[in-house]
Length: 117
Image 1 (cartoon, rainbow, N blue to C red):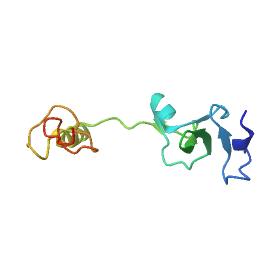
Image 2 (image 1 turned 90 degrees about the vertical axis):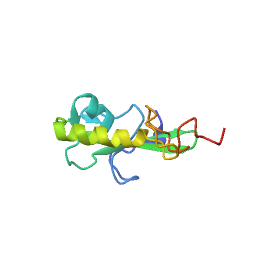
Image 3 (image 1 turned 30 degrees about the horizontal axis):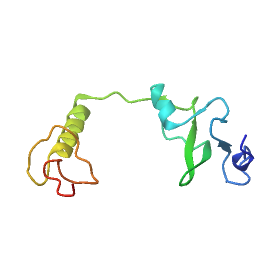
């Protein structure tokens, strides 16, 4: 157990803090809530996870499962909006073609138009 990040009372970090994989039952990250079909639903962060990784310290917020709300269903209008957003990310600004995949933001153009290679 990493004693460095063990602060269940929140005295050191301001909110209850646990090392990775040491959170108590009843708390979950956003991703874990989503896997259960839930969302935080406006609740405050109940605790946090902290762990070391090669570039420093990472964290994840934890939410109470009993206060989580169901994920809102996608309506036809939201599906249209999502499709329009994704379509825009597939159009290359250089050649103006829909390349069929989301263009990487680090390059900014499709692979045939990429001059950095």
